[in-house]
Length: 435
Image 1 (cartoon, one colour):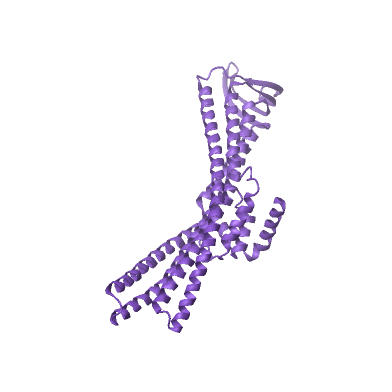
Image 2: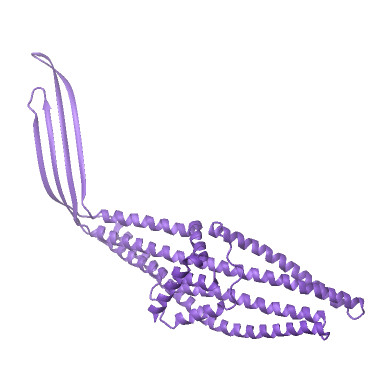
């Protein structure tokens, strides 16, 4: 069953690459603009270079040396002054191969695990970046819905002000009713101004986060909550993944720290290298025949630490403390993701009940609005009744939109906690939201 669901997700991803690439393109744009994500990539590159450097220490090392010299000297002797020249030339080629280097082996494994952890951190940070954009998108839809409905409610409030003025003129209303309707209109005007300010700030934040990528859709389908809730519930019928990119990164950091402790402990052990070399030296002068010396050597060179004044013990304590820190970070990551999953499942169950109640309330408000519209035409309802019914209906619609946006944010948190906010899952979201 899980395999079939994965296949469906991959099909959705392939089918929506062209038609629904907006969300994925926004995430790719954010990758190039987000300093935290770019920092994680550079950290991975650094750790990869360190792993390559540690591996190079275990391979053969070849070196060559060459020197040449010339000397001119003069000698006063019984037979007179003599000018003599001396020429020397030498070269050496040496090959060194480690035979027993336990510290280098442990350091290599530690560096490799650290690079693997950094690679997993890049994947985890990409999912976190996608989650951040999903949160911004949900906030954007919420603000747009609130602003649109506030403007519609303002129209109804204007009608109530007009009705209150007419009622007061006709002697059927009171000053209190007129003042209350005016205060409601002023409150909506302030609310609209605040919403426009928040919308401008959020738009600027989106532009900064995505390097100027176009804003996301302002509305999502009203049935999105049901789709997201079904997706969450169906996912939670299976066991949660044993690993996520975040957990894998923390686990690999623990393994790296374990090998780092071994690497420090191995400072107490001797090292053994096999060294092979060939050297040649040539000496020549005006009064002697040139001499050439060829030397071949094969050696075993051992290095044994005798006294370090407590440096090794201090380094071991430091490495062990770092290991304990890595273990705690792994446990924290596991606990956090398990909690996020449980919160999402529990909240979605409550959301479905809330949405059912809102749907019932929305149907009631729409029915009351239609009755008010028909009543105004038939003379059984007043314009005030129509305005009040309109505002009640708009309030119910706003609550539905807000709950849908909240579901989008919660779904994103849930998939992030499972380590599944990847391209196939994001393509599914793009398909169901038509973005």
